[in-house]
Image 1 (cartoon, protein in one colour):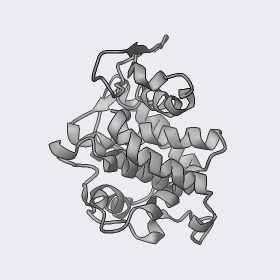
Image 2 (cartoon, helix red, strand yellow):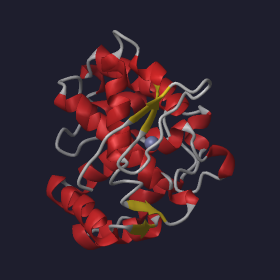
Image 3 (spheres, helix red, strand yellow):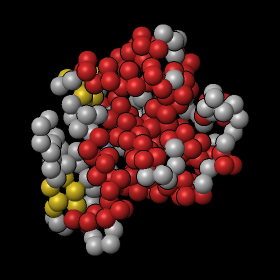
Image 4 (cartoon, protein in one colour):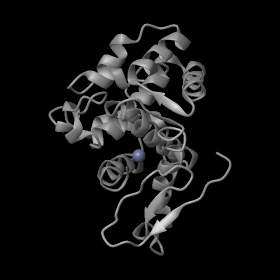
Length: 227
Ligand SMILES: [Zn+2]
């Protein structure tokens, strides 16, 4: 990809963004005066799709979390860059904000089915999976995995099984239980699953209120407005 741009359309009823390769399409309502900062994370989400979704496409639709989880995670990295919260804080705040009996946890992220393919769980639990993996394997291995994923699958497709195999290959770890917890289990992961190993204890209480607001805002808005 050598150039990039955007298309903003005012077609009536068009109210979500779409990651068209090199030219994401946005509804004009995203860019109302005074709301530019609101649109920015969603623009970032679509730009992340240039790699996660466009350059590397899903093998099957059930692998859609590989697009949406990583594009949503890019928003978490943006939040960190902006000084709002770290991805780990957002992971913990999101985990904390959604009760165990919420239907959110009943979606199989790696095989959500046609009806739930674009559910909030695919986006948000997908991003939670990415951050949890980063903690599980450590920063160095994590970024190697991300880089190798894009390199090896560029201009082709990738599946969840291939991603899991790559993560195990690069980290040298057996990750079956990890991925079962995050991508396949129809229940809320246990508290231990969201802990950063380095901290050794819950830091949810220390998460700024604004991080929790971010998490809630994403749960509401990303699902409704972003594909
Ligand atoms: Zn998306």
